[in-house]
Length: 194
Image: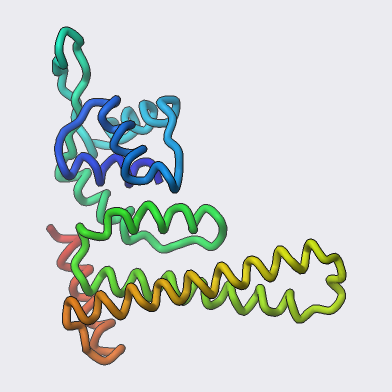
């Protein structure tokens, strides 16, 4: 997740570690906190992979390493942005971070990813409702927890439905589902070859 955020910020401009941490806090700080203890190892890992480069730079009287994204980093960024979601709490946070960088994706890809997220939440909602129907759960707090999960999931589904509707209208995406899938597959192949 941190690699996606780092690459997304470096797409905008080269930055040193302090700038990256500040930008991460400003752009996704309410969703997730990044420490220097995780930022710098991630930067080293991305540099070893060839996704970013580092150059010595100066800021005032201090020397700071400035990081920039490479073509390999651009490819990795798109791969991370479109990766297949996993179920669970970590996916909730990962989706929010990915959504912060959706502006870099074509409209059809955004719609596809939003629809995929909505489908995952709809499946989660089925499970939550099954737990609520289970009468063996008599603990009021467990029941309240499942009721809260149901309400939150229903709210997220409604929010995603609105995002999808707005994206379709703004981008004039009206193709039937089958045609849209074929167009999305073609678009994904084109994006991978860039």
